[in-house]
Length: 195
Image (cartoon, rainbow, N blue to C red; front, side):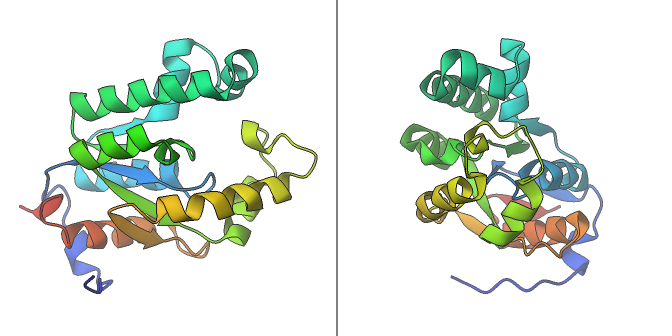
């Protein structure tokens, strides 16, 4: 795999990009998929899509409410349907829930119709970002840190199957993260090119 140089000139072009495939951001809760995704979409001049927001809108319920009422298997089925629909509808930046990429069917659809980018952050960075939030149904346990650690250890090998990996060290601004992602994408002309 070729090394990606983190320069700034390639990412300074406003609106001068040609996106060939939907970029699907994957990774753990707290990795920054939504925040980076919104800023990335703005930088590239393409739509921002969020599978969790689409599910909540369709169900008229929050993700925690869906988990509580219908269970995780029901949620995962809906999530796959929504991801498939979003990949069919338009090219853009798609932020997915932390568990989405774990489903083999979702990985297959994403590989077929988009490009997966893993926002990789270490466990301590993730814990710092999620520990004070009550919006994570999987962390509503007696020991949320142990739960997060267990999820992290189980999921990292799956996230590693993404097309590209961009590191989020917890110190980097959203703008710099966007620059890193754009540089990584430009190394894949089948996904993104400068106009």
